[in-house]
Length: 214
Image (tube, rainbow, N blue to C red; front, side, top):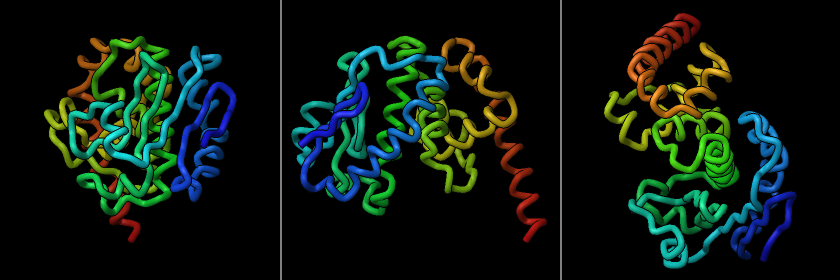
């Protein structure tokens, strides 16, 4: 089964019918906003999004390095591969994932596609995940959290922390600075330590204010 959108084809199965319309709605709602965030006019190639109801087929296409992987961007082939919800629940650490997370997972990977079109396919540091978690709105309903150390930020998969530092960057530095980080990996690495420390202080101040208001 498949749905054709502008510049996007979604390939899915009967088990995805529960949320396929919400995926389309979110792409319609946020897709152009994400493209415009990176100052792009449009996707440079047609994008295929595959939802897999078979883990073996997913792994044959994605070759995941981790047992918790549920989605992957392949910029070279301009495709996104995602497990269907029923299979996500079987993956390590995802047994409590909400069905409502599926459209945001796809938006997360869509941000990666747009970011790599903007920055080039060789870009790869924590800023990629900060962009994806922040711009997709994936963690908008979660409290701010910087419960990670600098090593975690640089080499881990601490998504809530990536989203928190992304929110800090947008609030305190703005979109153009975020885009500079997104384009220049060396600059991003140079800025990492002070952004980490500033974000930790910012979260502490926010939490103090919340406690005062209770």
